[in-house]
Image (cartoon, rainbow, N blue to C red):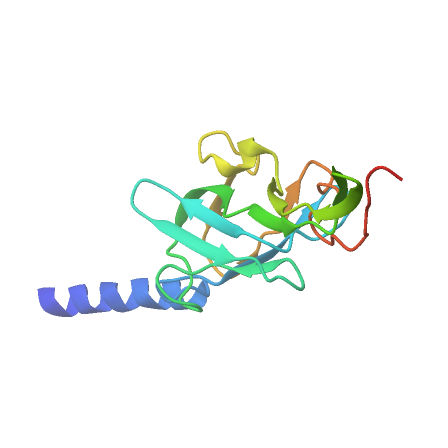
Length: 165
């Protein structure tokens, strides 16, 4: 009889998890945008607590992420997590040139480019991120807002600049 009670209790717990949409892990998706509505299209969303680290790569076309624990599509265990961003530094090739005088010739030399941080630094530190916390209980959408403007030229560096003109 005691064994039957334990089996029934386990079945009840399992049915509650399945009914909540988790089945052990929960699908969490969302979109990362700047305050002007522009999507962040580079980087990784991180959910972290004392025992678990989950990541979701930001889609370069849409700014949408889907969280994973080990592999794409496997979801997030229920729990409370701090949210922060990582891999948000992007190398931007420059289309800028500088005029350089060599003897009696004037040459245009390309500027190689630079690394640009796409978000303010506090968004990349787990204990300082203004993105706060999330309590995962089931399938959910969590849009994230970066309270800053996108860095100029970092998301779509298309203009050709020439100095000295």
